[in-house]
Amino acid sequence: MMKKILAAFIAAFALLSCTSQKQGDADTAQENKVLVLYYSQTGATKTVAEEIQNQLGADIEAIEVETPYDGDFQQTIERCQKEMAENTLPALKPMKANIEDYDVIFLGFPVWFGTYARPIATLVADNAFEGKKIVPFCTFGSGGIEACTEDLKKALPKAEIATGYGVRNARIAAAGKELNRFLIEWEYKKGEIEALPAFMEHKPVTDAEAQIFDEACGDYQFPLGTPADVAIRETEDATEYEFGVVSKGEDGSEAQSTIYVVVGKEDGSKPEFTKVVR
Ligand SMILES: Cc1cc2nc3c(=O)[nH]c(=O)nc-3n(C[C@H](O)[C@H](O)[C@H](O)COP(=O)(O)O)c2cc1C
Image (cartoon, rainbow, N blue to C red; front, side):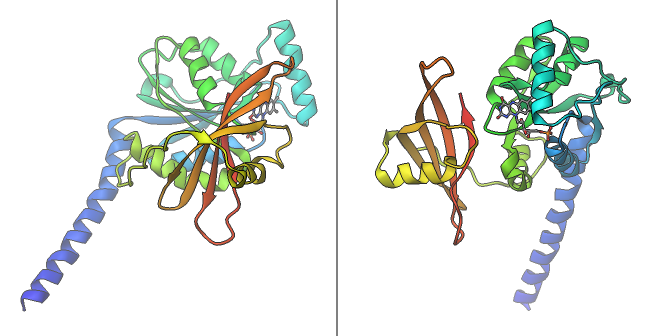
């Protein structure tokens, strides 16, 4: 009898916590009105934007350029270089959403030339986002969320620029799970996550670690450098490496970067680099 009562109590409690969990998510999005505002040229950032929209139940709007960047990679590079040389910015189509209606704006973009894509440069030149909380998110070939966040802080001194989320376009499939952690960790939605352990201290790389680095980075379209030291941490799902890397800059000078590599614990997981921080 006692067991039955206990089971019923546990079941009712589980149901209650489930419902309040759902309710909690909706409340968070409602208390703080959230807009996901993004520019995406080739669709990677759009995928991440829609994932954030789904996880938060937020409003969403794509930023559109009057004259779209619809060329291939090389043509886009050339158009950007011309615009940068001439100091011009692309005109944007009028936005439908009224920024004033929102408290928190998730601002998404691809990384172009180490900073936010040019349509975002127009957006931040035209809007001060005064008093708004901006959460940057981006997709990239190798990295750039940290530099973009710093650039946004300079461009929008009257807004609060929060810690952002970035993902390599080659790893977009990992975004859903990573965003779940990110959104809970920074309290944009409710939920439980395990705290991650800190990285251990950096040590010179062993041959085995250098091989993991090569497997993760060797196929990338540009050389990413040589790992000098590494710190490791074990999480529930993966072994993560923080490599201190030495590379040659464009002018031949030595440059330092940090490259993060993850090796999943499932059988057959291949090392992948998650981002380069320059
Ligand atoms: C003009 C241009 C410049 C780029 N510059 C960088 C860069 O500096 N660093 C980087 O990691 N990726 C760079 N990329 C790659 C894009 O950031 C990446 O492909 C992104 O996921 C595209 O997002 P989208 O599909 O939403 O347009 C660049 C791409 C283009 C077209």
